[in-house]
Amino acid sequence: MHPDTTQIRARRAAFRQLHAAGCFAIPNPWDAGSARWLAGLGFKALGTTSSGHAWSRGRPDGALPLPEVLAHLREMVAATGLPLNADFEHGFAEDAEGVARNVRLAIATGVAGLSIEDSTGDPAAPLLPLDEAVTRLRAARAAIDASGDDVLLVGRAENFIVGRPDLQDVIARLRAYAEAGADCLYAPGIHTREQIAAVVAAVAPKPVNVLVGAASQLTMADLAALGVRRVSVGGALARAAWGGFDRAARLLATEGRFDGFADALPGKELNQFFGA
Image (cartoon, rainbow, N blue to C red; front, side, top):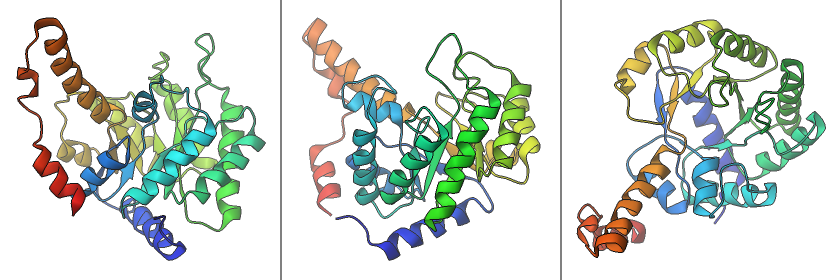
């Protein structure tokens, strides 16, 4: 059952409050079951993952059409009582007007936040020109403001993800996105203490999201000390699940062995949790 307007409003207020101080983890489930499990572990908010969701549908990241993504957002909003941040990719539109239209559709699903990124999908020119990216983000901001709903807007600089790891350009882009109305800034792919500290300082006092998508020596406490406000994991939990699945399936396929099931959660435990 989809939550009512009062519940959605409360989630959005709680989500904005999480960004006011401290540092929180916002893990990324890929379906209703993984969302409910993460909620059961005590996390305060969740974020969708375009890659994790796409893989669960047998598609590569970025290949799902807008109607499927919107249906997924509605399912994820309904799955738990937690605020949900939408990985809204590039807004699913070629121009700013389309971004605004689609942001309105995303708001209607009940999400508490959404991100707009500046990648193009074109390997030859993987980043939007800054002025175009800013125009699109301003359109998203205007759509949120016009809706009257307190949805948090995240501006993403994709340089490090698309093979353009220029920290100064990242900082210039994030500052421009903050000026355009982003409530939270995000540069997936930065990972050293120096990179993270530079980004946090550059956009202060606005909050920064850091992606930790692989095993890292940095802890939540380390990231908090660097001034990071929230930490997401992108497709890492989905990839971890696929890793366990693949190891067990390969042992069965190649060696006829079943010891890949050794770390599997008991069905009784899963049934008890989901039946609660």
